[in-house]
Image 1 (cartoon, helix red, strand yellow):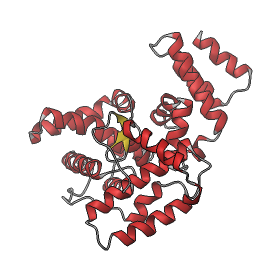
Image 2 (cartoon, one colour; image 1 turned 90 degrees about the horizontal axis):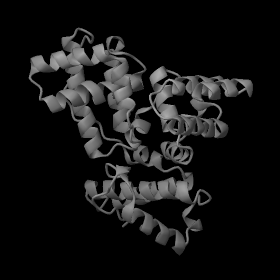
Image 3 (tube, one colour; image 1 turned 180 degrees about the vertical axis):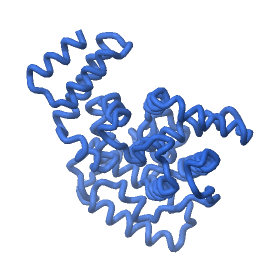
Image 4 (cartoon, helix red, strand yellow; image 1 turned 135 degrees about the horizontal axis):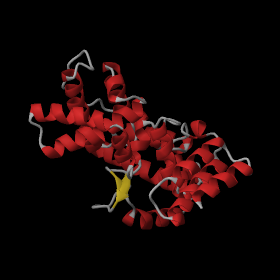
Length: 301
């Protein structure tokens, strides 16, 4: 039935990318309903955004909203794995990747095995070995658009810079991925893939202006930056960071649930009450949001 679906798509002049995805879905070891859901998700996203490369330039919160609405993450992950699109780091840090990294490691088992061999020589723990050789390597290679042997020292520098500026990367995310990057760079230097040994350094910290690029409404972003710059003169840096996270969360909520609200003057009491209800049980990513249960409540002070 899935193969017939691809034929039907061709007959109706569907985009080549959708046809190729339908062919790929036809060969997946999943049931007919799962295949249909994957094809439909891809069709919905392409109907709204027929040029995926242009869609990838949209702000991360807008793309997350599109993916939630269309349920097209499986299609997007396939595009990344096949090289039709290159993912940016901010999106991969903001979105639960599902089996994206597992798909990449399945495609590149030799690359993973070589990192594991170096890890054994270095005496890394089994947990850290698995994290670096699978999650870390997949993340770096996907964002660089390269395989292990194609990586260079510049790719590590580029990743570090992107990590420092990613609006979706909280402190824990930056620290964890910086450690992954250092270990991977060690392994690549040991394998003679890279020419320079890694430098142990604290991850760069994004400025408030860079962090607030995650706020999709320009007017609200401008007010938020002015407010945070003012309170930064009297509050501890960590407190300012927490308030920035809260404002980003609120702005992302508005972008998804109240897209017509573009300035603070348009806010009503109902908007605030709805957000407080949503915020009490929302998923989280680091200190902002990710798709696992939250442990604590974020408040706007």
